[in-house]
Length: 207
DNA sequence: CTCCAGGAGTGTA
DNA sequence: TACACTCATGGA
Image (cartoon, rainbow, N blue to C red; front, side, top):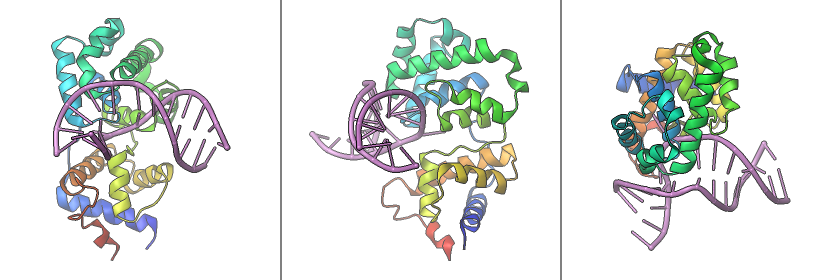
């Protein structure tokens, strides 16, 4: 059994267990902001920060650009790295509004991905989250959960090849790509809470 | 108390 | 290319 078969089996396994998941179907601005906030932090802290930003009317890219940094820092402190994340939010929001503007919908995915990656504070996962969940583009998010579940399934491919394989096996379909990543997170939260993965039965997929 | 969470940038070899 | 280090709060 090769790596392609393992990924295929993993996809089938998750699909049969969870079905289609409409994962992180939020507005564009919230996805962009959340993509930065979720860096090295639990999602529960992100939702808390997003709620505070909303209550302070700082939940849009426009307001992020014009607000005092201290106001943003106060809202997102619970996500950790709040000073660095505030700087990243301001850079990213400014880039999207001033450099991309309304033409962002017309920029090809690969070109837009490269553009996002040039921004300080935007790495592969953040860029792919924005593209996949904020703009419904054909890309797949490789994050800590994805790596963990794949490792359990005996898949040892590097991120770049893993992303290409998921893209191919999910037919470059945005709905399937979003759903699959959601399934991975649901599974990981259910069975991989501890490091040992004692209740994880993914390795059985290998036959 | 310790450990780590849906990262990314920088410096070092 | 491959690590080690930094950023920082909060929950288990």
